[in-house]
Image 1 (spheres, rainbow, N blue to C red):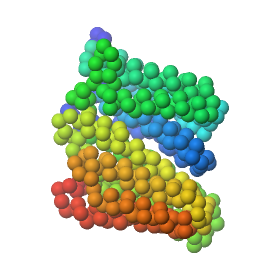
Image 2: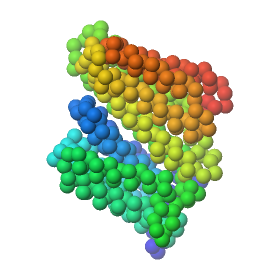
Image 3: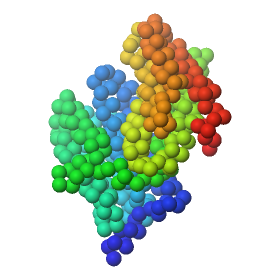
Image 4: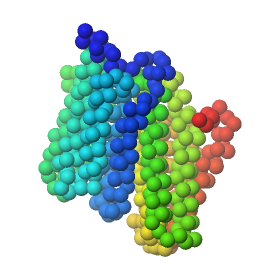
Length: 396
């Protein structure tokens, strides 16, 4: 009976319904709309080297808790009541996690760490039980994963009890443990390690889930530009910055979706070991994409608030860094799924490096226009290179 009950929690394999993203998964993602907003505001409000390090760590944490959930719902069926209940609990904990982001390195450190650990360990234990006597290979996988997450949890909770730099160090150790885990096959003495063939994922599901998360991040950039523009007096300069921010966000959408996403979904669906490709292209490769969009949103705020600023290397780093991180992420993502690095993206990175040399002498809004122009050049180059070839899937 236990076997039948557990089996009913799994998705059907080999069918369109088995790989379809459910409405509950989309509902779950709403929490991360809040998370991304909190991260961009936290970085803008504490834009110092230490503040950037703290925001970076929290970005890694938010992405990790989301991508682990995306992997889990690749196997578990969100339309089954126990799985649905698990996701709703994760949503509540995710809301607590998101709400504590602004004070995660202040008075709400333990709250942030506690919510994070509860999400990671709780979800992994639930999945281990769901796999029991149904899928032995994945049962062992999730026992290994839970072991790694429990070890990391010690440092998360310890960091929540510590203060200032000690908290940052403890959380960096915790995050390092979790990020090394997949690359190490979650090796555990006595249980061995996972192999790529163990991770039988639905490529279509994983590609769609990550694409939807990218949409969430791009939505934050749209919200920042729209909200800030609505609060400022209308002028030629604010209108120019608004249009620049919008075009930059559209260029990012184009670069990711026009060729990258469709080609990746097709490639992973026909891969002999989809788990290995999913780990490389989605689990790790999307991190710079996420970071780039968040930094781009912060740069938009700076363009509105300090349009005529010159010589501020920190602001210049945000303006150029957002586009640069995004291109690095797409370079990694497209290289992993196509087998070759796109020359257009490499050229775009070179252009951004060259712009860094003139950035101290250029006003912030002009630098933003130039960074957006680089994205447009890269998009046009890639379109000209791939349009009409078999590498160019149709737009959906």
